[in-house]
Image (cartoon, rainbow, N blue to C red):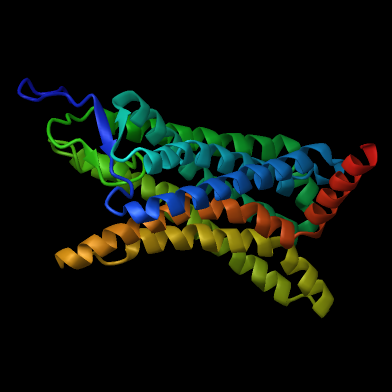
Length: 319
């Protein structure tokens, strides 16, 4: 869509962030900074152990390493901008920088949806068809699976970002958010966004609906198989191999459903409170979830805990 002659093209966007709540900015700056450091450390350690420890060279830990790298990329695409918005009220972001940040955030989010679905399939094969697991989940299979999740996420992000950035923005350039969130940007367009809405709806079905359905069906088969195991110890051991993944799935999709599924307030005062609530929930989704992932996998996985301990002991022994 070409820009109309009467429009004055927007050269950048102003991010409001928490500028309406200055007392919260310093507190959240310190809090988000500490969380970001934990994300880098926790996910960095997980990547290190999955690469350096030979017994962790399995499909499950390969996917886990991809998930950790994805979480680092996702938060790095937005957290520095969020921190800067706390220090610089009404932060101005160039049009091109906003497009890049929007692409990276959308790509990482879509990739994680697909990756979590593939991790569910890995757990399904491991528990329901253990004898065939080495064949079905060979390196020639799980590496292309991970690569395709990155390709799919990047492709849909490119489509959505291109459609959004081709719109004319001719009036208000203030984004009431921490980052260039695509829905917040679309609200500023002075043109018909029906194509964008339809495209987003299709993407949501493909990258949210399909993986959720796939994960749900996979865990029905997994739970059915676990309940058939005669010994309590065997059931506990089988469930422990997928409990971490299931916990991450519940947190990831639960936050998304809560963020976009709750009703909107029509009262102006309630709308202001809800606006702050929406921002904080978005912050939780973007920062807290990636921080929890390595903690969950470390606490609920004996192999990862043992690998981290060995890595720490080796480092101290060398020193």
